[in-house]
Image 1 (spheres, helix red, strand yellow):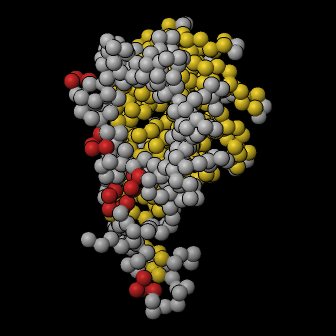
Image 2: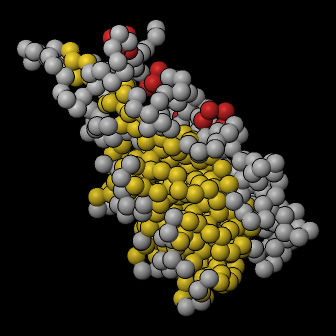
Length: 473
């Protein structure tokens, strides 16, 4: 079936007239109108083109101003020349997420593999972006919330970027500062040592302020595998760092800013770290606390059960305060593949957990701090858990809300679930799905800030990738 936008069916009516003619149907047109539709008896309504979400997204080259009623979403969508966005709440009372892509996106960029949001600013990594002729150098994009929704403000690239740096594999943002990891960057003769770049916002411009590297960096450390930033502090994971004879034990580095200078303040390692723990796979910072995931920890007794470690800063010293593990953890859960931190709460993903015997359905665990003690408060699972959902691969936490992805659901079409806390109880309030086809990887990354979320789908359209912005209510 062919679907024709509302401005096309009336084109033939205008042909016999001058191009500035007005058209009125059911009455005289208003002086300011080119087309004016009236119902003389006030008993007729106007029906715009009605399409399913899949049909709407398949419309070739829609122009700015195109209007469609989405049958699946239950709301009107307007095209702004680049993307579709909803005009009214859906029947559930919630606006569907708004999709955004890179202005210069191309196949295999993997835009959306990493995301972060802070207030009115968001950052999206595209580690596979080719910058000029430099293959897989990688980039990151800044989006800002305006009266017209979320718009791209800047594209960030490393000043010394090179082939296969994978700049944008990890991203973080807080206030006027953005942090981008390039875990495959070669530092001198050290192949794959890795680095991270700090950018600062000045007006509408984002300027590279510093390049961070480990003081004791070595080949294949993967420094920059994960990053987080808060205030004047940044934490960078080096998940494959060798500590002594412990190959791939992993570590995390803390940097502090003074003026425009970033200096390494501490190197964090697990008190009981062992070979192939990959400590630093995930990192998060909030206030004076840092949490670091080691998803392959567990030793010979329970390999890859995983753990997460909490560190507390006192002055310039960071000390391990707690080791977090799942109350029902078993081998190969990979607890710690993702972490989030907000106030007195920590959220840890275990995407290979088998809840109810469902292989790799996944889960996530909430911990609460009282004094210096961290206690498991809840175990969160998907609303319809099934094998291979990988729930918990990416997690986010902000205030009383948690967002947890299951990018493997529905043959890797993916989903994300919002939870809200009331007292000590965490309840599901919304499941966010996408109408894109399977293998989109919707939920490969998530972030949450003050009631607004961003979700990455890095495999969308031949791995060009996209992100979706939305609100919790």
